[in-house]
Image 1 (cartoon, rainbow, N blue to C red):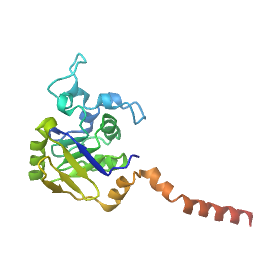
Image 2 (cartoon, rainbow, N blue to C red):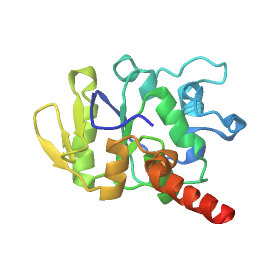
Image 3 (cartoon, rainbow, N blue to C red):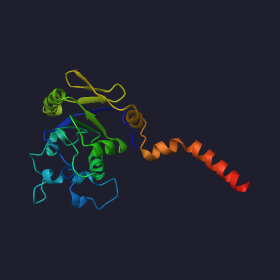
Image 4 (spheres, one colour):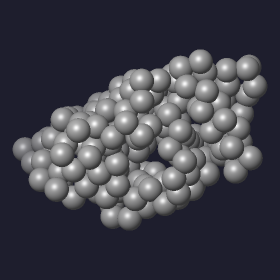
Length: 200
């Protein structure tokens, strides 16, 4: 998993509440178990028209936001079903950070396990971030995980809370497999003891 330390990007404003996982990645794309290739289907029902052409009104189709790595979204982001394909699609598109006032628990947990930083802020701070994001390519946000800050284009700073263990995992690029591998010496030692007992 790619470590998350600092990220500077033009933020994309998605001023929609209750964005569920079916909006993030519709069910017809859930047949794959690969974590790659889903970016083109991210928000597909909002991004594309019925004829397959791009919807120019959707934020991620607008020139300023096509390469956004930060998504500023409305309340209760990631609700609905528990599909892990939702963070896979966001990450494959290039989104590394989602900022909202609240997240569905399963989506929130899955994000950390896939290298995405979900940040909870107050409603007042979210409105300020929406204002910043609405300025398009003229504005960037910098998210610093170590200092737990979001710095806006005018130099203003917002602080956020994060669980220390989750912070450690993101900073060091540790998913569940990576965490297990950190214990490899202890696992090897334990297995060696078992082998000795078997021969005793």
